[in-house]
Image 1: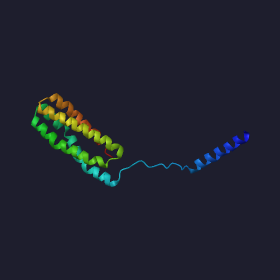
Image 2: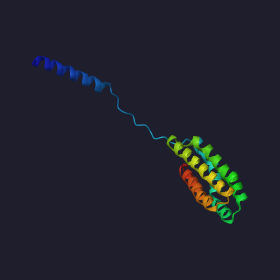
Image 3: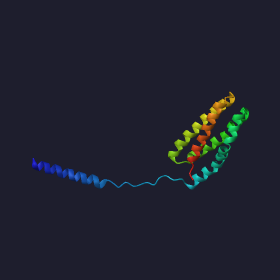
Image 4: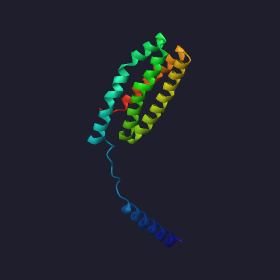
Length: 147
């Protein structure tokens, strides 16, 4: 019985040694970074989004004054262009940021639709609350942009 235990122990030692010797050290991979081509593509679209972001008070004033046709024009004009530019930027972001950016643009669209609904029904409360949310979405998107 003692002899069988020693043979079994020897087999286990040989097997363990073999398994440890076959294993390779894990290679640390560098975190993903932006290429210069990606950064240049992103930077081409950011100024147009920033211009619309800077015009947020203009939309607020139009809603408060009840200029519903101009509100619709602003949503379907500059805001739609900003959203389109966002969709052009998304494929150039890092993979973890792409899913966040897609969700932000979906949320932005939802808020813009509600602002438009508020404009079509002359509901300034609905339009104002979603106006704030829409520009919060733009700010969240701009935070994902690399420096």
